[in-house]
Length: 453
Ligand SMILES: [Zn+2]
Image (cartoon, rainbow, N blue to C red; front, side, top):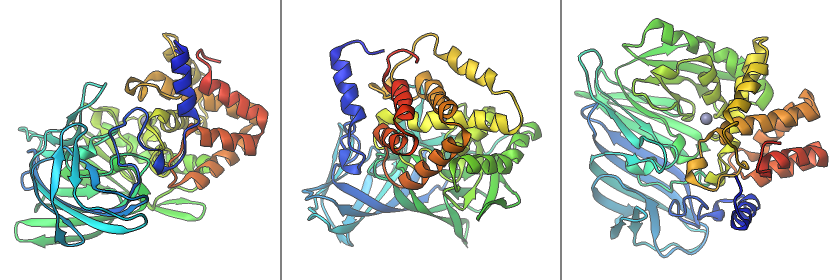
């Protein structure tokens, strides 16, 4: 709810904010990311000697560019002890800052120059308490039990990546990733992207993955554990062939593996609505802790209790909305969650189900209160308005303009915004130019009106 003129002023500032990485600092997370820093690529080498325990060694090489003069390079980091910091191969001094947690590298960059920053760290990773939700973000450790070997994985949205790697930890600075995972022989290691290599050296092996499409730091998948690798038939969409592999902890029962077999059909349905799938591979990795599901790039992280078609559809939709089209500010999470929630209705309709129960359920989630779609507090990021009101806004737009125009609009949005940090204003601009003033007004009402339109 809008409660005061001050809130209205903040809302308007959020709504009209820039759509570029230089829009940092973030309105809701002003400590995250360094204005003027653009990380192009991360090369991460993680060694996990005892899966299930929180100790790791990680060497991060960030290829970065200064968009403005920088006196120091300031990466978000609250991870284990740092052993060395180098810039272009030369050791440089650094300091660690507690609030906001930063690794400050004392190396100045002139505007337009590039550098390779290499940071090696090792130690125990404990994760970060989320600002609003009762969960710890970042590197997860799942201890071995009598029935299940130990596992580790990354669970980073919104700002958990900094718990174990130094990063420019904001979705407005998406990057490509090469990830090398060194684990004991017999243990699986998977990450976002395409597997390039798997080399055994004595008792360990190193698996390398390459992700060539830029994604936010929170969207990088990393999983280490004893996993069944289930290779599926390639998924064919018009003009694309997408490889598909799912990973299950060996203890996962057959009935909880079954829904994942629909992934190929769901991907074809969503691709028809959203446009070409942004990557060349897809799959899910099932994890045992009771966390929310997470849309990690090319490889969604699916808690075993979330193994349902509806959740599989939701996370797959985020490959377009959130991963390929990154947020420009955390206040716009509805651009991720509204589209991903709406995908659940599109899949239900593709199976000839009546969409009305879903629409009713979304309205019911908002009877206790709703808010304009642009978040004004971290507590809003993953609330019912971001999901259900966001989905209802898209349905209102579709109902007004018709399926063909709505589909064309979504195709243009994903094509033109891919790799570009995106704000609500960008979506409204496109609605105005492609669908006309009346359609843009409808969407604007859903975005800005305090109560449900
Ligand atoms: Zn979501």
